[in-house]
Image (tube, rainbow, N blue to C red; front, top):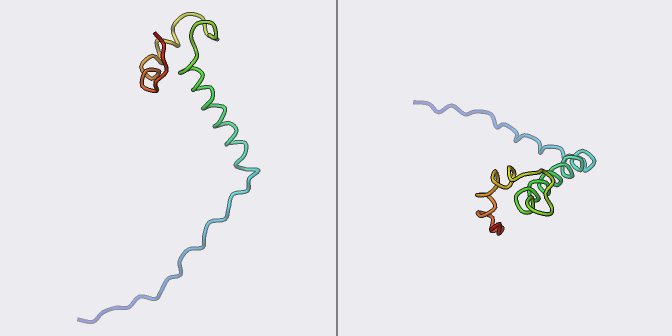
Length: 72
């Protein structure tokens, strides 16, 4: 039984870094979406409500308790 040797393959080149000007808009967008989600989970009720009624409060009620926000 003969062993076959394979030629050495070069490792792929490291990926090129992504310029900051391409990442920054997505980072800002993601941060704004996280702040909006935090608002709706943590503060959307009562005097600070943007949406009338209790629909948003009831939708995020369990998540609010899971994250430790008091609501009642």
